[in-house]
Image (cartoon, rainbow over all chains, first blue to last red; front, side, top):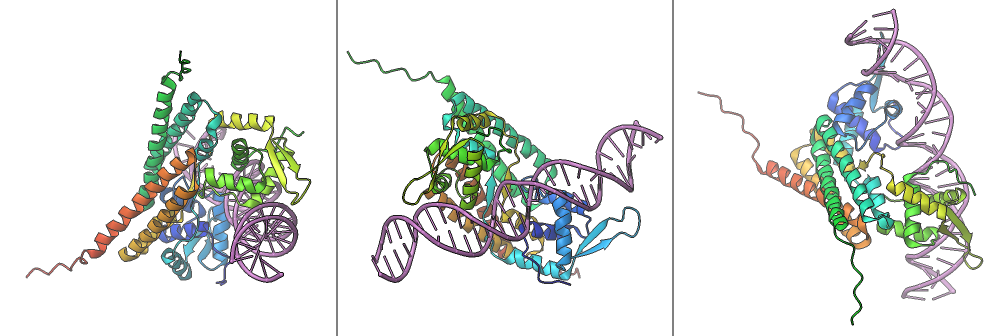
Amino acid sequence: MRTSSPRLTNTSYALLGAIAQAGPCSPYDLKRVLARSIGPLWEVPHSQIYDEAARLARAGLLLEQQEGTGRRRLNYTITEEGRRELLRWLRMPSRDRVDFRDVGLLKLAFAAELQPAELRHVAGDHLEAWTVLRDDLTATMHGPGAAYVLTMVEAAIRFWASMREEFNEAALEPLPEAIPAPV
Amino acid sequence: MRTSSPRLTNTSYALLGAIAQAGPCSPYDLKRVLARSIGPLWEVPHSQIYDEAARLARAGLLLEQQEGTGRRRLNYTITEEGRRELLRWLRMPSRDRVDFRDVGLLKLAFAAELQPAELRHVAGDHLEAWTVLRDDLTATMHGPGAAYVLTMVEAAIRFWASMREEFNEAALEPLPEAIPAPV
DNA sequence: TGGGTCATGTAACCGGTTACATGATTTT
DNA sequence: AAAATCATGTAACCGGTTACATGACCCA
């Protein structure tokens, strides 16, 4: 049992946490558990789940077992060592940067050359996208993480809504007239 | 001039936008412009800026010129084609997923095994980190993106603050007594 | 029993990260 | 003129993404 693993990533802990939470899992189960607890703002593609689970098994943090019959799929169980590592990480201060990668932020930052009407359109676009996202995760996410993510999503929705209003008004206002030259 | 480029990434548009906004730039200038407009929630390491700027130049979207004297550093200017591509992207509906990768979300999702006191500690940790981040970006970020990011950061701060309160109260409450057996 | 979706995997590529390294400027 | 920091680059590695592919199960 290899106990010295080549550095665990956040994805590693996501898997450890999911298995600790849900019990023995197939990779597909893991995908579903993660969808419920982490949600669509931090997706882990299934191909990565296969890789990462195998890696964690090699590191001795998961136990890998293959079904003897039928689909012969792999099943993973957390080991005592895995649970210890998860708890250690949970208690450890978090030092990682937060990433908030939203194309809306990029566009906003560099949209100086767009007309107000175009900006309103951009804002409407993103308002729509965030609203769809909210409905999606309201339906699919559960647990303590959901409340956090919802908080953030609602904040984004309020922001884009007010931004659209702002440019609505801007678009309705007549363009500033040239100041008449004093006689 | 190669006009068919191998797919532009968000990072590509970040650089295009930065140069459109700030005029001719050295890679180091770009780093600073991005720090101001995109901020610390979407960092682009300087090594990547060098690579990406060279790629954009090969694609004909930036013009690369080397100083003839002194440090002989590279300077980039946006081309007409680059500006067109930037505008095209700005006007295009955004289809990319938003990524919100916050270790706090992970810990929250899988912290079921922690004691209330430990959870309070986690919440305090993240409240502190987000507060530091807010002060940082208040001082360093400027432009329309800053307001958006601030909105999100303030939401996170409110969330973690209320979460810490919640577990404070939980910790203050006496543990539920065993119900006295009826006589 | 055939079509669709669920489930499971493999493989190649590449953007991005991390680490190394050094020259130019500024400060003390 | 030494130290510190600013500025600039290179290079290797690897996690993560994308694309390919196939077998099992369900339902009409």
